[in-house]
Image 1 (cartoon, rainbow, N blue to C red):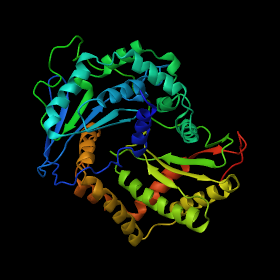
Image 2: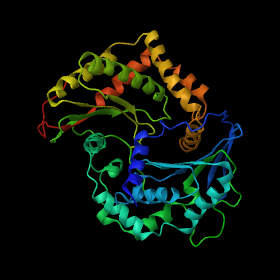
Image 3: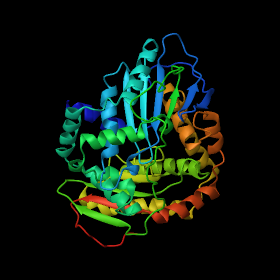
Image 4: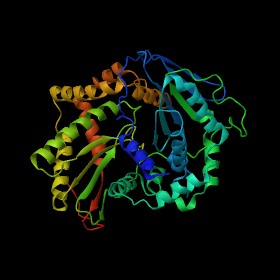
Length: 426
């Protein structure tokens, strides 16, 4: 097993769900049907009308994530899913990706139509027949993780989520796996406990075989999946933390909680994200020249799953505080000054154009269809509905959003700055 396999996993995670590659342009309609079988498997079949040379898309949501891992077994769920991913890489699927989230895991597959039945049999066989009994592969993955250095970005994100949720919250499981406590037996037991029809949602552009996950097996496939609930809420702990590092740059993460996709304010958050990205780019890059790769992400479907709007950038150590001062000035302006209708329209059009391309990609629609069933999102595969919701965003709503969420900011900085610094920021 070679390191590039794991590298491809990480690349897939960084891309997250909304940045998928368009493999083939084709006409596609999202009309479909959702069926829940007697054994609890939920199947949503998208109605695909395509040109003659097209692909089939399958998305599988496992309704268990790394936030459900047993206490003191951080890394168990992620390791299990990583093994599933590597095994399916040897299937007949043309493309395999997976995205681990705190509340669930998403697997995506692209399959040549002539191979669809064969792929379904391979997926069926893996789940039913416990083909995870691969001692050597599990050990190789554990050893690889143990010898992989933690990046500055991961350190900064870990601190940020600890500030947002508290050090013991399950959302931090992703950042503190202890592979020395895991064994192949625990991985297999966890796999058998959670990989069951009633813990899966499958979206597909072709009809699943009638016997999919229905054949006799050596374990109980209908027993209810029981996992610990993930506690809600945010901590009232410290707002900032600096971690000293020998790196030549300071890595900065500033974030605040944001609405869930099911909440009405979600679409206001999408406009706020566009505003912050535009304004911070003008300020930090164009005017001040502090950084080159500024990002403003709304992690409503990214990992970790907890919805946040995160401002991330790298800056020279001597420019860290001036850059942060510029960021807080932009936040303060949105709290105190209402956007004009013309400004809102401009950011709305940017978001509509960005999403229009996504909604034309069959792979994206397959993912959103599965997550739409999981999260009960009416707009998941309906671009017109998505745009209609954006049109409801108002200047008053944006001001209310900023005044509600911005004061809950948390900041982590990893770089050559004094650890434990308590100097207050604006």
